[in-house]
Length: 583
Ligand code: ATP
Ligand code: MG
Image 1 (cartoon, helix red, strand yellow):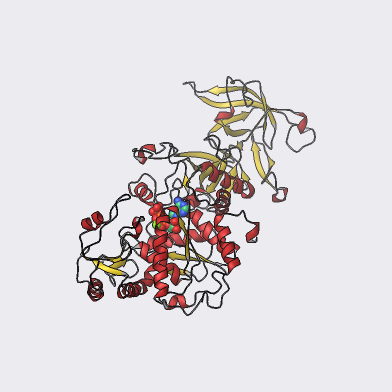
Image 2: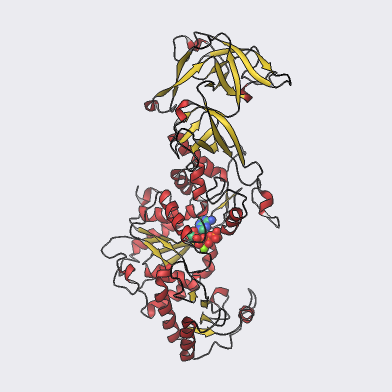
């Protein structure tokens, strides 16, 4: 699909304008300063734009990241560009190889490919360091030796300007010497920081001499103990973009205040010959907020480490690994991202919209099967004991080419408990004494009564069937019934564990106000039952998805299913049971 056929948005308008004006056409794609690994970026390729998805490997990807992934990779695809996967691993604490691996797997699962463009910000530490020295030499940065509290106090507020540090006019030679000794490990954490020299009276607090390097004696997951000073995110990120020849650096709105610093830094680095002009541009869009969901890494980590869920891939978590186990599909996420689009103003999206997108795709792709989740015995008294026959059920009602499969029929069946009422409520059309229903793909039956144990519990329903009413046989449709229920032959059906997942939180905005978000956990977010499944489901492959008729979409759990003993997870019900979605 060409870019022009996509629903447009302000980012596409910007890119269209840049392409029309040739803004990046003059960019020298190769031979620029930077690590050898990057010398090839763009060399000989014709990428018209370059975007990147830059996760910090300090957690698993969540649904919000999916929006950013679909946006960045989608733009590169539509415009004939390239999208880099870059690990923004400039922070030595909290980052881990486990997260790196999971992120790689999830981006691939969503259906995107970065080709050879997999990068690590930590691979640029030497360059960042050298650029910092260049800034000091140019009088654009200085080492500040105030305490953290003094620095904070000197920063000012939204209404009051900041005050200059007593170290602000320290000479270039002294700053350079101190910075080199910071790197050499001569000072403890917090003794000094390197700051950009901009304007302590700026109306934008981000421009009041922001810190760009700090001392941190910590081991880094990729560089080990090679460094004891680390660049601040706001300094590192523009450099990563510039070194990788990114054209459009797309981030969420909270970085809007940082854009002037992004531009300040790259303008200077270009002037100093550190990077090639023109610099990349930062573009902000509104992050995804989803109702009934938390999308903060800190909260997700808390849910996992405190055991409120069964791990990062718990199907109730809004992580991509969780969604995959839940039975959600990459196509459903991509459809969702297209549907919600991108905008400049923060808003909430109803989780029902994502569920609808998943439902739509599952409806198109999931074969139909029969499962009885709450089994009740039905005995057909006029059907000969020991006899059995086949009925035929379509694998997809809208796709006759998918064919039909045999479903065994016999005298004793399982039906859903809720499909029988001894005393029917008003408007109830299913089984009750004297009423007729069709056993879907089978016969019409008439209920004759029910059987109870000594405690009064219902144990079986009795009926007679009409021999000439079998679905698909001549004359079968002369029987008119209002109810149509699913069933399984009791001797042929197999017991299987089924996990009924529901939303993890009961509140629209979990933890809104002063409330602890854990207080909003849904105590009924998981119900494990033993259901009966049709023989055709017994050998379901891990991750195979099905519609269980009249129930919803289910997937064979990728971890716990065994050959011959599948475990099913409910992805979504057939209809949104939480009320109208915001669609
Ligand atoms: P958190 O705030 O949960 O810690 P983060 O933004 O720090 O998330 P990163 O790993 O830095 O997480 O995110 C990688 C990319 O994904 C960033 O470009 C970020 O803007 C984007 N992103 C993160 N959360 C969302 C969201 N809710 N909606 C859209 N994009 C998001
Ligand atoms: Mg971040």
